[in-house]
Length: 251
Length: 208
Image 1 (cartoon, rainbow over the protein chains, first blue to last red):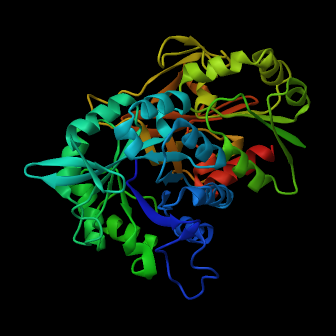
Image 2 (tube, rainbow over the protein chains, first blue to last red; image 1 turned 180 degrees about the vertical axis):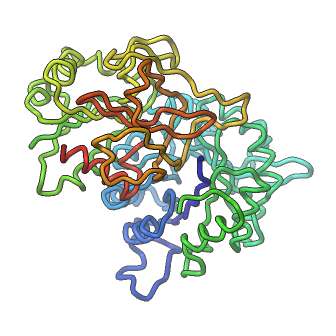
Image 3 (spheres, helix red, strand yellow; image 1 turned 60 degrees about the horizontal axis):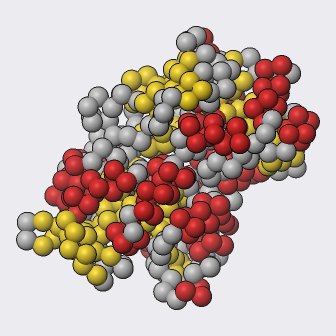
């Protein structure tokens, strides 16, 4: 039976982890490689890096991070943030990323998704959808949540599937950072609309939220950042909890 | 000993290279090449594959003499070869991804889309699934039945002779996820991404 995945996400800026696990025995709390290794040793089903480097000249740092991590972690590695072109995707894959997550570029230039999924295969193309509720629908935002594209998130999800995305990483902008739980409505609506797996993101504050994301939100995988930071919960605790609630996980 | 990972310019093989190098430390020399003479001289060959069946076959055929060299290596000289993901699928006679494409024809059978039962099962089949070991395979030494492996695929290999199947996994139906036919091995899952248990499979292959 296919297991639901737990994916810890690390924000990386200028090659350093911004929010991460803050264990006392960590040699270097800002080292993404060491943090990723802790997650993979702890049973993470995948690791996600979100590059939030703002300046162009420092964007090179992510490639070095990915290269080093992929030599130490033998679970899938997804990298997103600032991915603009097929060439960017190519470079990340060559550095050892297994999947690349595309956000703004997928909205602005659908050809990036069409061409890259043809070239590298759908299996490594994840499209990240940042959605915000507006009345009775959700709209897709770009540029790290700053711009409203006005596009309907559900229709966009279907379109992006047709364009060749292998997975969708859906983040509720209303919930992101609030720790009150995923936007279950959004997740289940998108998941029912498409035939590709949905990764739920945005709003996790406790382990029940992970359960809800899978049971009610119909997500195939749950992504979380802050609950794993500072050792609030370990990946193993999260998995044991899901297991106790009857959700199939890899233990 | 030399193990060659065939680099035929199709898809992303960094993870395969990293995992084999991790396991091979000080024991084995890992080459990554499409150089025909190097492939001929190597003791073992790894045939990775990502993207579509058609893309992979086209990419193999683009390198002059490569399929003949692989044929000679695996079929005539019967040296150990491991196909991963589409690398395994290409063992088949024929594949139906994008369009009907002729495979290497090493193990009679076809590669078809997984039956998603009208959307009941999401495709690609992405994530960790358990393998059901159905016969002793040399690459499964010290691998427990029901171990979790990482999968990502939408198509499945359906061999004619069921005796070649060494493991299956349950997703919509019993999908063939590992084969062994004499010196030819293949996994539909990605041992290079399947944590320590996957590295053990790679080690088993290297140690053959």
